[in-house]
Length: 219
Length: 217
Image 1 (spheres, chains in turn orange, blue):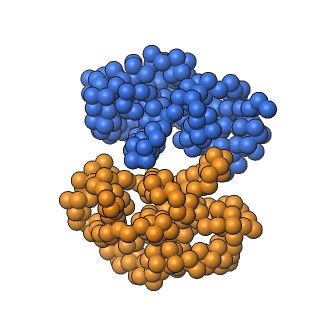
Image 2 (cartoon, rainbow over the protein chains, first blue to last red):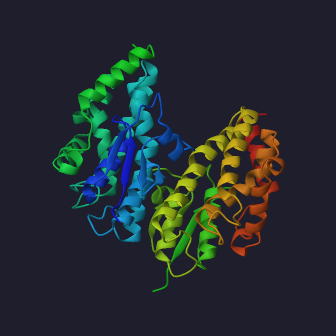
C-alpha cells in the first residue's frame, strides 16, 4: 500500500520549511496544502485541535504536529534513506539540545526584531545576534552542524536564512558582519537541492513583514 | 568500565524529578549534587555554559542538558530495561507531542502562577490545559496505556506543585480534573515515582518564600 503523505503549512513558516527539507531529503512524495492562517481549514482544525498551528504532517490519515517531532518521526519511519539524526545517543542528545536552543532563542527574538520599532527592536536584535553568535560558536570550523554531512541541526536552522534579510533591514545590522561563518554555512546548505527547493524567497518574506508592519501600525 | 553518572539538580525542580524517575526506572546508580541556584557551582557553569540551568546529567564526564533530552538519552543508552518511549514511531511522536505541550502551554501557566501577580487568571488557564491532558488520558490507567511511560514521567513531577497551584491560583484540581488526581495517585504507587517527587507542602513553602522575596504578595 503506497504511503499517503500530506503537509499542511504556510509558505512563510520556517517550521514548515523544515518539513519540506526532511521530506525532500528522504525522497518522499507528498501532497502540499497551503493554509490561510486567518481562515484555518476544517482539516487543520481537525488534525491539530490542541494548537491549531502549522505545520502538520498527515501520514496515512494520522496527524503528527510540532516541527521537531515531525522531523524525528520522518527520520524514524523512513530510516533507510539519508539519516538526519546521528546514531550515537550522545550526539543525538547534542543535536536535540541545539534544535531546542534554536526554537527557544531564534524564532521569537527574530520575529520581534521584524515586528517592532525603537527600543523594543534594539532589545530583540541584541538577543537575536547573541543567540546567533552562540550557534556560530557551536558550528566552529565544521562545514555543517552535523559535521561532514548536513543533519538535524542544519535542517532546523537553515529555514531562518529566509528571514535574514528582514532581520538585517528592520534591525539595522549586517549578518555578514556579525555572523560571517553562519552566512558561509547557509550558502553551503543552499547548494543542496532539498534545501534550495524548500526555502521561501527572502524578498517575498521581507515584503510580507513590510505589509504586516503597516497593518499593525509599526511604521 | 562502570558508568559514572552524576545529576546536578535542585530539589524543587519538576524537571530534575523527571530525570530522577527515569534513572530509578532504569535502576541506574548515580551521584546527586544539589545546586544552589543563587550561587551556581563551577561544575554547573562548565557543564551547561549555554543555559546555566539544572538538571544536567553528566555521563562518564560528558554533559547532557534539558530534561526531555536527558530522559530520551537515558532511554536510548539503557535501552534493555523499562523502555520509557514506545517503539512505534507514531506513538513516540504522540508521546513527544504531549511532553512538548507540558513544556510550553502548561509551563507558561505555571510561570505566571509562581512568578507573577496574575496567579488567578493563570490558574483558570492552567485548568483548561489540565482538562486537555485529562481528555488525552481518557480511560487509560496511564498516558502510556497499560504501563507508566514517557508522558506520565514528564507530567507526574508537576504533582508536587498541585497544592501550590491550587493555593496561589485559587483553583481546585480535584474537583475540576478528578481523573488526573486518580492517575497521579496510581503513579505514586510506583517506588521510582514516590522516591523522586518532592513533598507538596515543602514545595509550597519554598514558593511562598520566593514570592515574598520577589514582592509578589
